[in-house]
Length: 451
Image (cartoon, rainbow, N blue to C red; front, side, top):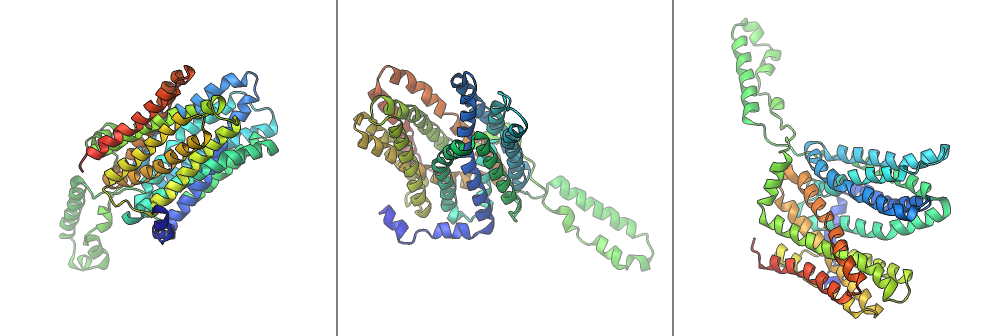
């Protein structure tokens, strides 16, 4: 039914979203940059592995790549709300592009210092939340409400495609030209994203009505001018210059950029919305289960399934393919149920996909489980993002998406830490049941909520 809906013409939302020039330009620039990002970690990993004792240093590289994300997420939100998002996204692209380009440039004149890949990974992690929060925060200004599901689906499609294309293309380029060449390509992709952001015509800055103090200041200055003019000769008072000076000064009362609230005030505003809190907690829990899955997949490929690395590649490819298909359908089909019920419904189906792990070593059913998880987690993400856009006040969108996405990015490592001792003891059954419960219970809570 869902596929028939798409085939039957439900792609109108995609067409309308892409027909908007500013959204199309920003989305294309973001998509190219995401492909470059998909190649970057592979290239940095390869450079580190080439160092003496490189295997042990991979853990440090992962820390440098992920830990600064939390600091950057807290800083990115206020900046996105205070300044034009076009300029913030462009500056982010220039900074991270310069960091990526530093390694190939240094390699041209000499040997790359061993610490340099770690520094580049840290810069990447520190600024990672800028586009992750900035792009969705800009969507409500670029796309009308009825097409936001399609716009969010297009963002999700970019993530899925880049997750499939980026690492594979990076591996091919590393084999042919080396890791430095891959980083040079990523630097170029950042430059293209910066150009795309700067060519968006519509300002992406939140404005608010002038404050009472501002209005009083404008009114007071007008009164003072009128009192002074009363003492001038009649011929001067009748001049066009003076009459224009006494006219209402609309330009002085133009809406100034919104001053962002302190981070604590923004967080309190978000916490007062029980729907935002509930959906964020549900996503954090689901991402814990996904973190467990990302550890379980390699373990299954090594100990349970036939094919070894090929089996792992198949699992990851099927997961990404499911996300791609689910995002395409979700963007073309607005849920008929209330948003919370629709989100909870697809989360429950995705949670059921974890039970397929109990069928190992039967490869086909495990692969089917990965497909279900990917296919039904994508609509959950898209519909929840549209819900957040409708509920987060415009002056808080930058901080709102930065805070919420940072929280959700923080939970997969928790799942990895939980499942590792279970798998080390060979307890796949309990691990699969824990994943299912962690993913399903928050969905049941969402079903019971009213909004």
